[in-house]
Length: 123
Image 1 (cartoon, rainbow, N blue to C red):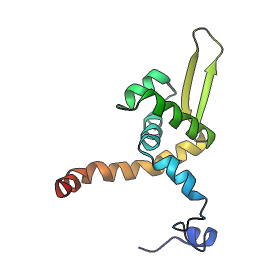
Image 2 (spheres, one colour; image 1 turned 90 degrees about the vertical axis):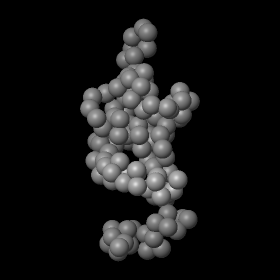
Image 3 (cartoon, rainbow, N blue to C red; image 1 turned 180 degrees about the vertical axis):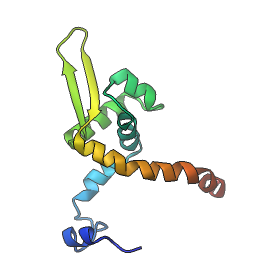
Image 4 (cartoon, helix red, strand yellow; image 1 turned 30 degrees about the horizontal axis):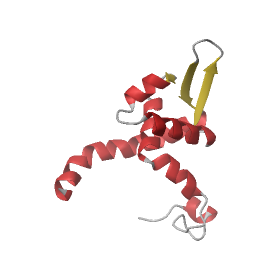
């Protein structure tokens, strides 16, 4: 498989190089929880904290909070805090996050299809 022209143009030493700035974002996006939060938010409308936590089963409150802060700081997730009592906060994908989620979906499709065979080999 050949490296794309875009990657070569922007990173002559390649994205494998330790100095490549994409590594930071790659870590945020491809972390287990980052990936799943992005996909959960890609399913539709804005989600409240509790709805998002139910969708991303297994994530702790601490990890969900940390992941949302990171993805928000990266400009991938929008946080909308309504000025009401009790607090009402909703999360959604930004246009950049929605674009990314469209690219991640085929990877998740591949993982779902091939996971059983991979796990059988590993186990």
